[in-house]
Length: 309
Image 1 (cartoon, rainbow, N blue to C red):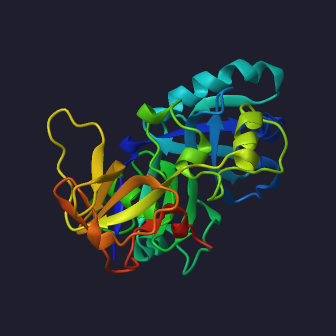
Image 2 (tube, helix red, strand yellow; image 1 turned 120 degrees about the horizontal axis):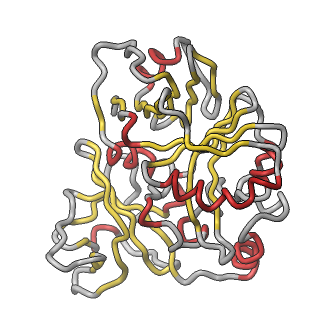
């Protein structure tokens, strides 16, 4: 079981509030803001007019204020992209004040301590002193805590974790760990955002919507993201940008997009032909074998299979 807390320096929060906040966000984000109930969350993204993702985030609505939570560095990118539209709406868009911080909590025991309640459903947020706590997923258990700077930890045994560890658990729920250097490079489909709740295809227009919708209804991708478990982290040689995925004959079948680790759990996100059906025991990434154990089947698992119900 993974139980830790990631400190505030790892995250940005963009805050939107005002009478037209929902209408403003509805016209810019891939998710359906109008159907987001108070004290709940949805995953979403913001695209440019070419249908490329500028930023991906968790959108939490509490007391009619919208909090877009993302890794550090993406907040300013998103604010810059959206600021030109704000004058047409009665709402305020800002990077959250220095008086508050966002912490990421992993582990059901830690979440229970921070929430102060016995149970909190996945996707539900609850008001706390000077902020809120939102339970993102049930398994692996993950939550976000928005609180005042310097607020005391309720559990002295809290273990400090890293953003990489947090992203490793998010991968198990089908979430691509979008960072600032990904901005403007990928369509939602290339990150499986169309399959795991980031994109609504019934909400109407938003920036980049026409391209995203066309790819969804007409596109037939030749490549697919797959999630693999590694015996150990693969080693990048000097000059490598993408590690090749090879079979026993050393034939290159795909490439490794990224790696993340949390304790003894080592995951790799790889790009393979969409019709790949081989056995994971025949594949390796650089010097690391792809294994099949724990919750993994005896083959490479499609990324979308990790989407929570």
